[in-house]
Length: 369
Image 1 (cartoon, rainbow, N blue to C red):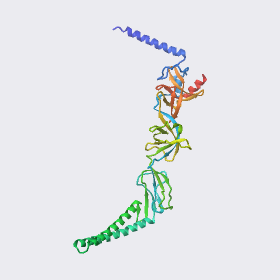
Image 2: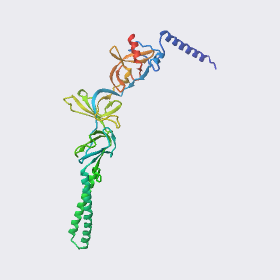
Image 3: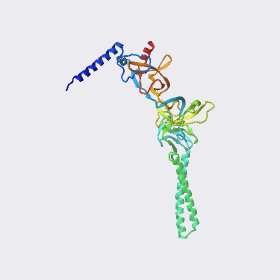
């Protein structure tokens, strides 16, 4: 087979490549960055930086992503437990605190002992239980004996019924005193009772000290269920018609979901209440005042880029877009930033690559032109 045609094609390709390399050398340009695209017509003159210089300056690149969410507003907020997630642990009987087993901030599980309290009422309940138990033994024996006599016709049945009623009353006394001691986790022999955690969570209030009295009407401990926290934020009235259930809020790296938006404007703050749920295990503390970002759906063509990719030149927000022959200075409209990412409303299309690190060197080069 004649191989001359293939040899001729190969020679033409080599010549073409050599001509292209010569043109780039004479032009003073460098090989285009990986992934570069043709510079659009609205891009100004390109900034020329060699590949070696780009590496030395620590250039890093990021492909602009079609944004799914757009930041709407930063809202002042507070972390609170929802209804039913905060429980007060009451000291139901008066006494003196003997031992405290947890402090404020501790995590506890359901049924965990919190404090031991000495109480005369526990001793009284224990004594009442002992007396009621003794009466029950005598009354039950008497009721059994009279019931047998009544069946034999020796005595009237009414006497047996009366004895049975006395036994039932003694049984009720035993049951009630037992229930009360069990309810307060009382120890009749030591005259103490123990406060137990009714739910698992975190101790947010511990107003109790060893040796201090409790009067039976106070709640020394408050426990918040840590897996059921929510956000309460003040939404300015101009956004009242924008926020919707199901939108996203962000607190640092934590993402929550809007569950309710108020319908009444507070005349003092000119805002409505916005509530959002947080996922279980979120690293937040109830009562903390903070701010959250509210997000809504992004429009087509809006993109997300690292915040470090955006800088300012001549009072304009710009990014540096990778293009054939160098880097293009592109003016952009910024929509907002959150968690290290910035929304660009215009100026950059999805899929374009921008400089995410090394922008200061390109900014200096652009300002020196």
